[in-house]
Amino acid sequence: MARKLSLVGAVLILFGFGVFGLLSGLEGRMGAFTLSQQVVTWGELLYAALGAAAIAATLRWRRYARPLLYTWGAVVTVCAGLAPMAWGDVGLGTGVLQALPWAAVAALAIWLATWGMSSSPAAPPSQ
Image (cartoon, rainbow, N blue to C red; front, side, top):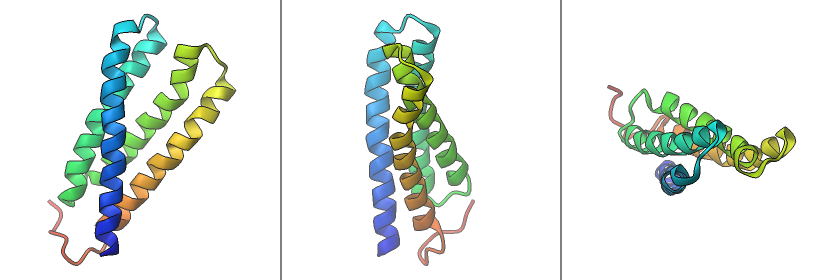
């Protein structure tokens, strides 16, 4: 039961980040003029797509779910750190501080998903 709840938590985080990334990426495309703004915008769309793929892979216990989750977490963290520098003209220190909470939530989602998939008695075999 706890493993299923951890999967639900992971899916909710991935879904929430995906919706945010999709909406923010679509909105940002209109006003992204600099290269860094375009990178952030495309990164947001990328982590929305990676999140959707990770949800599907996680719920089906696919062996490629873990690399998808790690890639998703890396893209989320980079976008969170780069966004204030691209849109707000702040320094690297502010970007790093901005990325830390996003990285922590991404790490939580990855942990919940991997723990929920590991040693699950009802888990189908990996394909």
